Length: 300
Image (cartoon, rainbow, N blue to C red; front, side):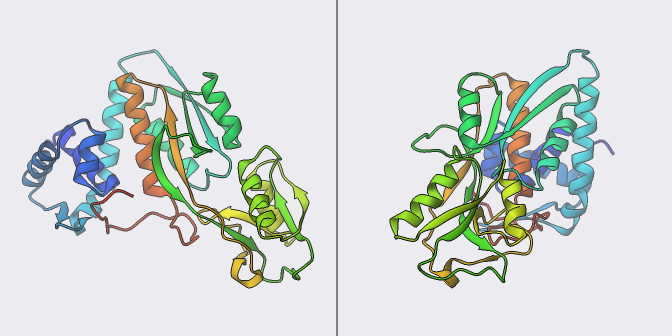
């Protein structure tokens, strides 16, 4: 049995994006063409791989088994093509420290598997600093939190924030709220302190960390409270907004910015976006995990 690589790619893309429409957009094709390729693959294998209804797209039992081998087939195909050229390309990627979590190794591994000739340079920093570097041409792509009124970039996921502290954290109304936050240039710090000021809650910063990882460690240690994405809840902490009457924090979006236009680079960016969507944690604050085979045919 010989499998059509394009048909396998259509199957994996539908599985990743949970949508025939989004898969067609990602592959520069049409929904009809994607459906034809998938049917051709299913006919070749003799098994249904994707179950589709007007409201739901999900992997069949056989599709769930075939998904990872299909990825391996595509990665081997890409490595074979990459071996035909000795030219290594350089990809400079910025990831905001309050955006990247346990899924970052998966993103980098998927990029490397997609293009083995790619040298990946990663910069971790606050969104504002990464945006400035991107605008100066120092980065090829950046995954950041949407800032201010800037509307460019591809939306990867919504971002929701909450207040977190250890279960034994003590705060009494009228006293300054003990905060752990990142550098003064961090926009999340501005949002947090602005929200407290707006409702008249005094605060004092008792820990200044270099990046959100250090801040999370301080909050987990019980030194202070802090604001975090529900995707990146510090271990051993609970949401405390209702307990202490803290103000709600505005939601935002995670976006992928890039000026790359050549086909090979755009393929790498699609791989990056799909890997991020697939492996991002749930909005409930659960730890990152592989999602199951239930996949709605609608935008995330």
